[in-house]
Length: 86
Ligand SMILES: [Zn+2]
Image (cartoon, rainbow, N blue to C red):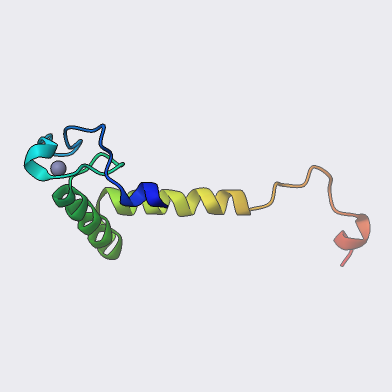
């Protein structure tokens, strides 16, 4: 948990905007400066709430993958004869 609160001292440039840490301040472990992190968060929240953009597509893919795992495998054997007579 502490790792998430501390900046990554090894990073020198933001992965998103490419600006130096001397200009934009500490770079997070995700590789983003504070301004880019805020912009990405807003983009994700707005995208999911308005059902648009990459964040929403990733969200829907995650739901679909979860649902695919939740559906049981088809049975290889037919049901017993007592079930088909009803
Ligand atoms: Zn940035």
